[in-house]
Image (cartoon, rainbow, N blue to C red; front, side, top):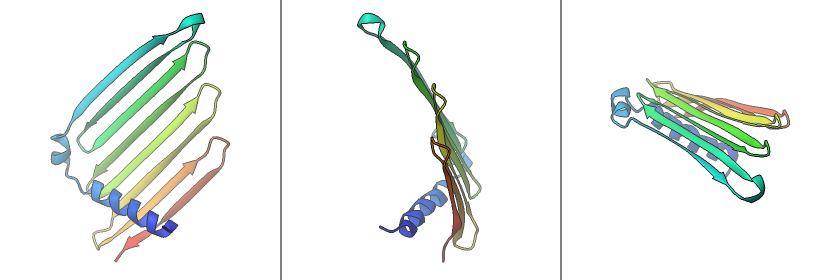
Length: 136
């Protein structure tokens, strides 16, 4: 599969997701959260938490994991889909300061085409971005 084919599939999927009406998305609303503490021998252990919500054409998720010896990470994800537009992002950060993430925006143009823009940032500071128009 070429990069163009892959991008076409992703953007088409995003355009379909963006076409979900707000009322339809509201019917599938939910909220969920949990946290756990795990403790082992010799002071080893961790605490983790997870929160998620969805409704009204948007969703958000956060996860946090911290160990007793100070290591850990945090992640956030979210999206909004409404009126032919989709915006989504994810970000991750470790306790050591490394961070990375990505964001995507797609818009249905109303003429059978869609435009998209994608940004990615790596943990070592590198970044890349793509944009274009797909469709008829």
